[in-house]
Image (cartoon, rainbow, N blue to C red; front, side, top):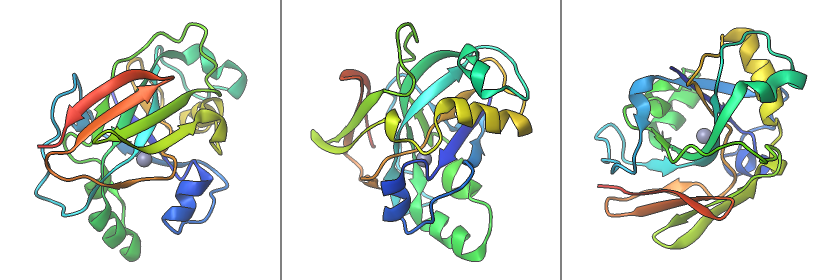
Length: 202
Ligand code: ZN
């Protein structure tokens, strides 16, 4: 499986990092080794001194497809969850300045936290509220209705380049409010007001 991530998909977040508003989805990939599941702790990696949380709605792909149209995109989704796209912001800034790829800042081991995958029954993909608590304080809160590119557009765009396969995960981008984590932090993600993940930084 692969992990497809979207960058700069919420206007307020693009602005907080000083980025322009994209005219097409900004895409990057993470490998399977980036996955962190089952509320396992996140061990602060030695590669960075400024790891940031990015809370994101995640869609799971249920069947293979290429050149999927927006109209049929929903048929390729079989689950939904919440995740964290951990980002080594110091390395990312360094790479951005040099015009180099982001993988070392984004695709490192355990950088893709995934919570409980939920049924998509009766879920309006374009109206999913979510929020993140950091040590019990709400630091991010948004709704997928604020995305620049909704999941149908993301699937249509991404599947022009990459065949989507069963089990692939799509991280749909983070809203404003990203920030650093420290050892000892507790992160809890809520999808539609239901606890979806709950883990610690060690
Ligand atoms: Zn992200």
